[in-house]
Image 1 (cartoon, one colour):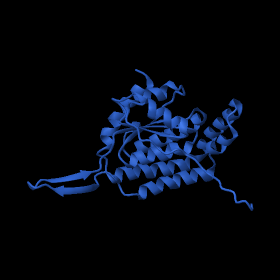
Image 2 (cartoon, rainbow, N blue to C red):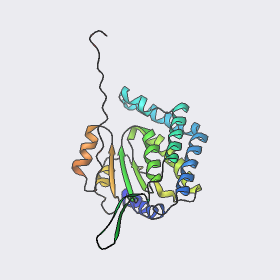
Image 3 (cartoon, rainbow, N blue to C red):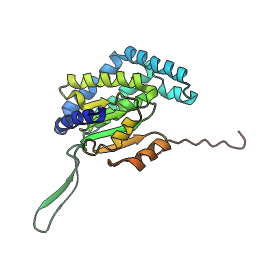
Image 4 (tube, helix red, strand yellow):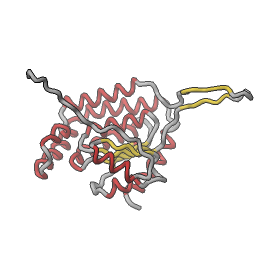
Length: 235
């Protein structure tokens, strides 16, 4: 079995438990994550320094260094964002709509967890926490495949989050990271129909189109991150 198959099996097992986890259990896990991120910020920064050093060695584009950098201030912002997720209503079990049929049968549309979510993204370690905690809140297990340039940062962040989840009584494999940086692992995720319920690409146009065009797993296509600056003639 390859890494995706192993992690996929573990994620499926975790997903069955997360699907019935209470709001309190999930929020406790999220609170533990926020606390652990703050308490272990120095370890996170040390791991991030390795990525920054490797980026300089490997000729990473200058524009990517700011996305990659983690500071105490940024880690505090990430932890605060986790606390904002705690404050969100639990989507699981919410009745979206309903109707009573002519025969008296009541039919409701109710939100349920997706199961196992795969996320492929680029050199933004903050996405590691954002994606994992949003999936956890919605009762889903997640398999993360981040960019090579953020490898050490992502490893440390997932290690911290997994330990915090276990502390709350939920499965360690609720949050997993693909450790191989080989691009074939991303391709394996795109074809893992029996293991991954939905795949979400987050990044540039090239990444998103690659996933949309090659995946056999259902894909949620996100918008391309793009910014436009308009300069007035008088500027």
